Length: 334
Image (cartoon, rainbow, N blue to C red; front, side):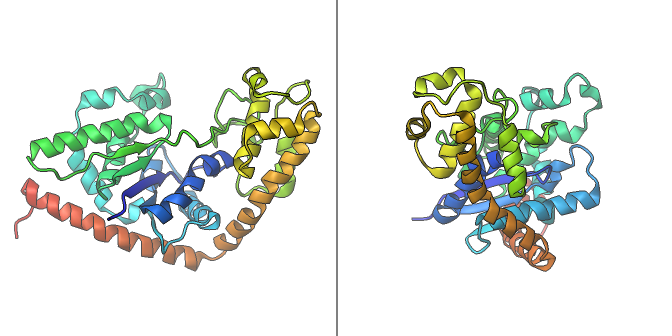
């Protein structure tokens, strides 16, 4: 019985933080063993806003280094950067002629990102959900791990695939299913537990990066917003204490200890005592990853060979898809 194909894309912008690891990368490690997994560094998505060329290139290497340091294995999954496989752009144009303007007008992320200055936003920012659809459909993905903020885009992908199949009277594309991991932790900002941990947050103390030193991790946890009460004695108290709930969630997600057990362990203790234990838990996770990232980042030849190898495997699949579509759409004159 063949494995499901799982596709996911990560933008090479900003820094990968603890929330990214616990919410996504940790799950990727399971996918590479249980599914036909394709993980793409979507550098073409990044240019919906201007990127310095050299910085963009370094960010691609940085994300790849983090993937490898966390345990993604190029022998078990396909790792590549989007721009190395031109078929992504080709299929994006084909699907742009299938997608309806009204569908794109309903995309809430464009409205949020463009804001009031919508007329000055790039066409790419408006149309990038179509490129996202191309990324997924190019490899006939069965499942796509997405967060709540991307679920609407996957629904659009399914609409585009269905219309294309209907227009050309053949089932070229599968209708991919979203993987929304309800068990994956929702890690919030260390400075404001009402917002998710984010690489775009102004304060560096809002997030813990996978490249942070032990001293940086300690400082960030020390400065993490909390309250003046002692640690909670029951889970019922967490609803009104979002900052402490967030810190306990981080502890639980890393240690694989249930939150109720953590609450019992630290009940009525000072928050500073809990933070000291949390620092140790986070450092034990990140320190070996951070060291491995630095080691891999210094091996440019390995990074280049990994991307080249991955892009060749991806291109072989992608080219097969485009050749089939060209024949069906009247572009094949052989």
